[in-house]
Length: 352
Image 1 (cartoon, rainbow, N blue to C red):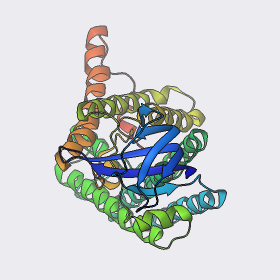
Image 2 (cartoon, rainbow, N blue to C red):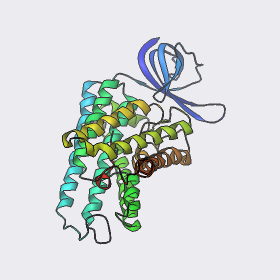
Image 3 (cartoon, rainbow, N blue to C red):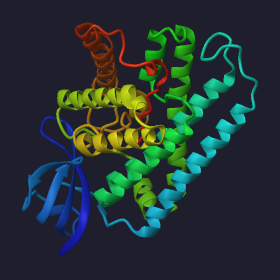
């Protein structure tokens, strides 16, 4: 029997490595244990990257994990509602934190008020919680590229507009520390708040999915909230993509002050959306260590150290190389001291 649908399935190869693939087209499923027998007139991919053209034939020893139909509008609206709930909850926390008395210092430091850390935690929770839902839509629902990119752009604009200066990125915290805008102790505390919020977003997402509000959530719950290999290329290739993405975002943030203030948010959102479209097939285009810790590290397919190499070292080197290029090398060659007066005041925000 041939069924038009999309398929997630996984198996362990001869070397003991877990493999996961996504196929869509017309599939023939045998009656014994719903095992994949053949794929005809379809396109198969590993993660989001093209793996091999159809027709492709596998033996019936490869088990089918789930047959994924096209996403229904009701499922999409449920996910949009979840995104709105995460933003509303985070905004409520930020408004509550704003009521706390400010500290004597202008930024994170020994005298800083706890509202700065609550702001960072609430904004990071919003970023990770929303991205959890967006990733689920992209991985397990046949969401078209136009709808996916539109959601990415819209949520990026929402994040940048509501974060109130929170970086939601350990690289941004380290940058401020290196610029001597804060000490090592407050920087470590900010990073701890970010990672705690990232873990909280994981638990929150699982709680929402456990409610079974949509078919997408039900399918994800049925298979134990598992996510598959997020890398569509080798580990060095993925790390290079993360480095390039972080470099590009850092460069955009360092120069966006030259534009009209009304355009800045949309320019950064457009850059991030373009990077997600371009590099998402290789690494997911996360370029944020704490966001990757929340959405990519729980996935199977690679070791913890490999994920650290891709999603932590890659963005850190990308940010550092961009700052070195635009604030040291180019000014040295041109005889100038800096690229602009507002660089120190700009905070990086990775949102998608």
